[in-house]
Length: 184
Image (cartoon, rainbow, N blue to C red):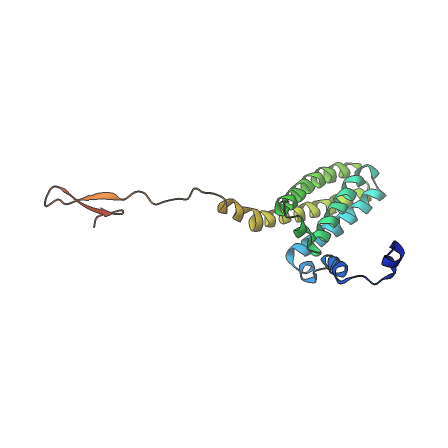
């Protein structure tokens, strides 16, 4: 009979080692457009956090929270761990993250610039740049992930108008043939 001490001393089994493979970083994702956007958002959010810490500490919570949220999305996408949560609509969550961050940083940036402190003005400039990056990310998510789904889920499709009956003017009766748009 194996005790807990004996199990801990043994090397890990193949199944346990295979379970850790979900945390390998996909380097192709980090060099893709989405990876670069997330890395840029992460770097700019950290810079804004540092600027707010140096000047107006009341606004640093928004930057810190968005830093951790962006870091979580970068981790989930880079390790492809998000695929294990298949019930969540990841494009919609990512789109909402970008839109809410754009609104929050737009408001916080304009509120910070009123202090006229050097670090607050730098936070304003980086905040406006970050808002544009978040807006571009939201636009790309909508165009690539959400817009195609809206057209696929629609059961109504445009159809051509119903064909009109053709009159045979020589006999004065309908000949039963159909034509679509125009004379035949």
